[in-house]
Image (tube, rainbow, N blue to C red):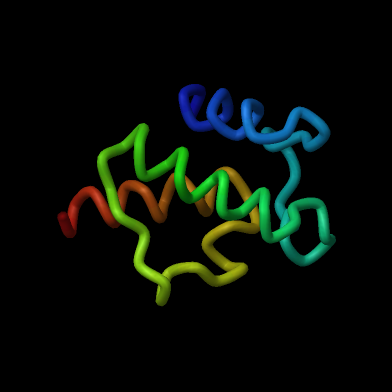
Length: 76
């Protein structure tokens, strides 16, 4: 989780990724932030996030993003 939090802070340091659970729903991340996060996760974890997985539920919190990464790594 620490590695993920560091990646997210590199994208934007204006959000408390450690505690926030409604990043998309509350409008804390914009579409450019999401694209940067997807690219960073792809690079850092050696995964490819398909368009079908780019939904608010997978990006509303760091915990949700970590679950997505873990699931994609297992499927990969």
